[in-house]
Image 1 (cartoon, one colour):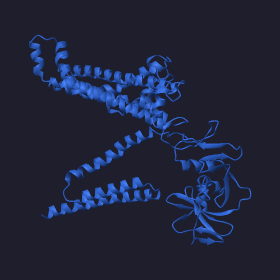
Image 2 (tube, one colour; image 1 turned 45 degrees about the vertical axis):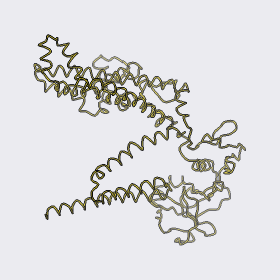
Image 3 (tube, rainbow, N blue to C red; image 1 turned 180 degrees about the vertical axis):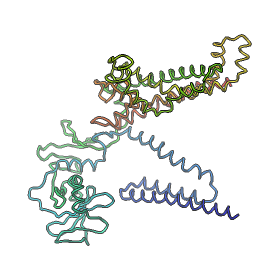
Amino acid sequence: MAEAASDGVKAILIKIALLGIVDALALYALFILFAKEQWVVFALVLAVTGIVNWIYFSPGKLPAKYLTPGVIFLVVFQIFAIVYTGYIGFTNYSTGHNSDKAQAVSALMSSAQERVPDSAAYGVTVLDRAGALSFLLTDPAGDVSIGSNDAPLERVSGADMDGGKAVAVDGYTSLSFQEVIARTAEITAMNVPFSNDPNDGSLRTPDGSSAYLYVSSLTYDEQAKTMTDVASGTVYADTGTGAFTSADGDELLPGWRINVGVDNFTRAFTEEGIRSPLMSVATWTFAFAALSVASTFLLGLFLAIVFNDIRMKGRKFYRIAMILPYAFPAFLSALVWAGMLSESFGFINQVLLGGAEIPWLTNEWLAKFSILLVNLWLGFPYMFLVCTGALQSIPEELQEAATVDGASPWAVFRLIKLPLLLVSVAPLLIASFAFNFNNFNLIYMLTGGGPRDASADVNVGATDILISMVYKVAFTGQTRDYGLASAFSIIIFILVAVISIISFRKTKALEELN
C-alpha cells in the first residue's frame, strides 16, 4: 500500500509539474496577445488552457486525457495550417501587400520623410524592454515623453534626470553607450510617431543621443482615404485594390492585404503567363508521380520475386544490399546524385563516359530522365521490402495446387500471386503516388526545378512539380505572391484528394479476392 501511495504521489507531482509548464507558456502567450490586442486568439488560448486544466485535474476522464494532446497538435499543425492556407488563397497577400492599411500608411509616410530644417533637438535615451527599443525624449522645454516605432509619443513623469535630460524610467532598461554603438543600425532606423496623426511626422536620431523631427512629403487624408504627394500634387486614392492608386493607375507601395475573392484562382486559369506554365507543370507532375510509382514498383517486385526464391544462395546479403539506398536520407542521396550528374565534373560524365559533357541536369528532357532515374534508385528498396513481405504472406498451397493443375509459372504469377499481392500493395501504391506528387526534396535538391522557363510570368522550370512551383511563387524571387501560392496549394489538395478517393474506391474490387 505504501508503494502504491508513493507511486500515486509521484504521478500527481509529475502531472502538476507538466501542467505548470503548460500554464506558464499559456500565461506568457496571453500577455503578448493582450499587448497586441489579439482578442480572438487570446480567448482561444484562455479557453483551451482552462479545458486542459479541467480535464487533467478532474478524476476519471481517462479517454479525454489521452486524446487531448493529439487533438491539440492536430488542430495546431494540421487543421489551422489548412484553414489559414485557404484564407490566404482568397487574399492579395504578397510582396508589397503584406500588412494592414494602418501599417501601410505608416510605412509610406516614413519612406518619404525629410528632416525639418529648423527642427529642435530632443535629448534621447534609448530604452529596452523585452528586446523592443523605445526612445525616452526630452524636448527643449524639459518635458519628457516616451515612444517607439509602434507607439506615438506619450508624456511620462517620474523619469530620472541628469543635467536636464531624462536618462531612465521605471519598467525599462537604459542602453549604455557601448550598447547603443552595437545597435546603431537598429536605432537609426527607428521612426517614433510624433502623434497619432501621421501627418505630424516622426522623430529620428542619427547618433542615439539627439533626435529631430522629420515630416513626410506625402500627406494622408483619412476622411477622403487619399494620399497626396506634396511635391507633384498627385493624389493617390484607395480604390479597393489594396494600394493607393493615382488616376493614371500608378500605385504607391507598400499596400495592404485585402480579400480578393477568387481572383487568384481566376488568374491561375485565365492569365496566359500563369495558366500555360501551370498546365505544363501539372502534366509533368502527374507523369512524374505515375512513372515513379510504376518504375519503383516493377523493379521492386522483380527483385522481390528473384530473392524470394529459395534456390537463390546468399539471399540475406543481397537483400541487405538492396535496401542500402533506403537507409540513407533522401535529400543527401539527391545531393550526391546531383554531383555525379554534373555536366562539368560529374562522375558519370568524367569517368563512366570518358569526359563527355552531357547536360543531365540542364537539358529539359535529360533533366526529367535524371529525376526519374534518381527517384527509381531511392524508391525501389521500399517497394522491394513491401513486395517481399506480401509474397511471403501468400500461402504456398495455392501455388502448389495451381502447379498440380498444370498452370505455368507465368500463369501462377499472373492469376494468383499478382492479384493477392495487389490486395496488400494497392493502398501503398496510392500513398506512394500521393508522396511523389509532392516530392519536393528530390526536385529541389537535384535540379532546383530547372532549367528555367523564361516565357512564364512566374518563377518555374521544366522539372518543377506543383509543390516546388508553389514554393518558388511564395518564397523566391523579388516578388513573392503568397495568395497565388496558396491558391495553387488548394488546387493541389483537391487534385490529390480526388485521385486518392477514386483510387481507393477502385481498390475495393480487390477485396473480393480475400
